[in-house]
Image 1 (tube, one colour):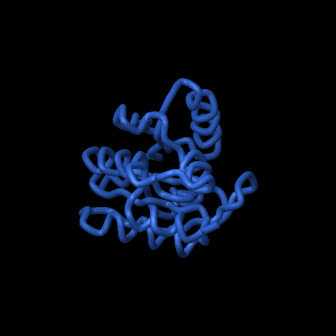
Image 2 (spheres, rainbow, N blue to C red; image 1 turned 60 degrees about the horizontal axis):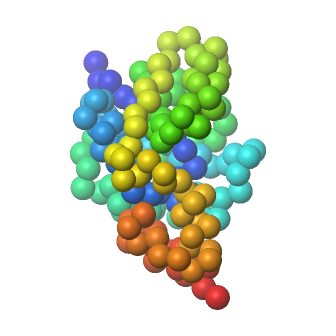
Length: 161
């Protein structure tokens, strides 16, 4: 049986920290699905879902056993549909833990058979978030070392002043 993991998020945009977690997860699972959330009641993405999928697909095209798919609605429904065994989540710092624990418990309440696997990014990415990247780019700072080149270019174009 293939062990499939699902790494969900808005990925608005994908960062080098996300890529680090993807590569680590591929060492654990036979297959990994990067599940791009179409919408979120909390966040309004600056990039369309098509752009976000494109950034991820282009950045990960050389990785084996990886799929990039869009989902909308409850993650557990997507998990069931894909017959995945685990949700992959990145934990950057203690501040992430409480929120991630709540999510893991809520997902387990909705679907008893699902596990959540927490992976820490490399130390060099432990501070990194999409929100931080967008803020740096918005104010004209360089995000070259924080995101893939395709994303860096898209952010520069998005925030041209």
